[in-house]
Length: 350
Image 1: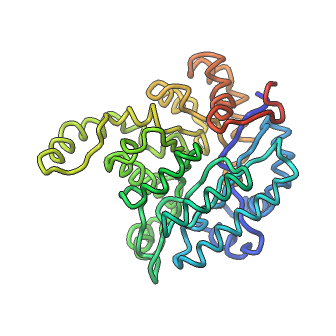
Image 2: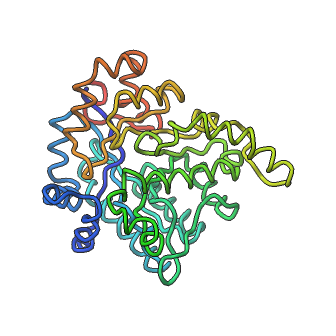
């Protein structure tokens, strides 16, 4: 399929190459690191060639994980996020019909985050924000700032006013949590367990704490076909309705107004990034609808040829799984065109 849109594609500022290489040891295999470094430090390099070869018409870039969320000092974090945004805007400027970007944000302060997102959307035409889970703060990074509390309503209002999506992306574990939970099981860091654990906690917190009830037009994107949540739709919803909601009502506590699936059908989009499973894609589409799913690769952590090879090479099976050719094209590009209000881009009508 030509003209696919891919929207979880990472970069890092070249001056942090040493730091990038150190963190790559967490989840990049030794024989894959040279390719990884080339792609993440050079977003307009061979990934454009690979996009041409494998039918990606438009790529939306975002800062790698943990990005600003790993910077514990507020001023330094804000400066780094601004540098990231200025850098990627300059890199992609020559390719407006091929590339866009998500804003990197310091999430130490909702007012400053709102201002930087507004700047990036209005000055650079960025298509939303991508944030790597909770913001780390404090001397050792042991303080976690979540965005599901009322003080963050000003930020969510900004997302709604700008009408841009917010991508909640994973980050690696750090500090004492890393040592206690993963020191003895380091091969579970990343996609096997740790990434999904963090993001699922955060987005479910947003649901039960009423963020989407207060902002029914808020648009949130989750990668990797939902960070393990879809497989637990029934169990989570059952427990919410059987136990959590009655408990919250008896205590006078805030709780989600709607059933769990409502938010996944009205506020949340899922991407195929790093989860190239036709069976899992079918399961998600059956529950939330093909209109809530977006193709993506997750380069350079995943290979563009592998992600596109799955979506194109398994096209007949995927088409049958998602409900027909229109749904197949919707996931590949049409949903993204609508969500991001994309105009004409390379191969958009192929």
